[in-house]
Image: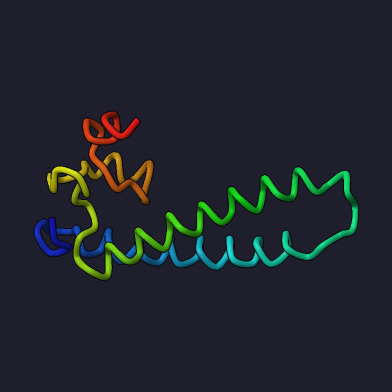
Amino acid sequence: MTTHTQPGRQNWIDELRSTLTSDFEMHTARLTELTADTGDPAEAHTRDALLAATRQSLEQITGALRRIAEGRYGSCERCAGPIPRERLEVLPHARFCVPCQQKQR
């Protein structure tokens, strides 16, 4: 599915790109804060978990932005079918339609 196939889709994609870019900046700032070592060993485990989650979010956002730029956003990476807009609104970094996502597990 390309970004120009449906009326209003381009506006939605533009808004999504803006939101994802803001999220990316927010997560990048959070990553910077988390990597500042407080020296408190009691916080190390929590900090490591937060770092891993933040890095995963950044990877997902980067992937979604790349798919938008390449015109592949909204197409399942497994079956190439369309990912429903409702799914993308809930999970903007979704790479698979629901049936294919269930097969991934």
